[in-house]
Image (cartoon, rainbow, N blue to C red):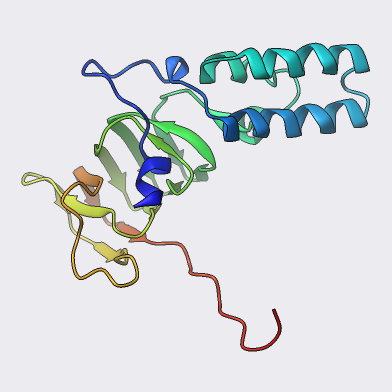
Length: 207
């Protein structure tokens, strides 16, 4: 399936550092878009813009690309994120989405807060990702592509899980090589909701 190649990153047996993953042309185009905006509003001079664009197309890894916009946008607005820090929400909302590198284990902590993780544009470093939960009176929202399996670890204490992840159109079951998101740890007084993104609505009239 096409979405699997976009969802999964190349992986070596020892799982590379996120910044060392190879960049795609789509990743480069994301950086170029930021640079165009920056030269348009004066954050970059034309010469700086030209130099950075040359570095974009010469870059081979995500880490090399990430360096080119670090002084142009705040962390939450970067074209993609290569950090593997835990996702934490203490009485607030924390969101992780867009183009980001998902390590094989993601610690998620929520105390009275809401964590929203969107993996639809993410790069997975493994076909089996463990979400290590430590949730008290909080909510964890997971958005994943259709066909991703959501399972709970045998010793997990996830008392409230709503799994609304759909199969791809026409599929009768999960593909043998479908990515797996495993929920481990505990959720007390809170909930986990896993769902697929909404499908585009079909237009009845017009092109």
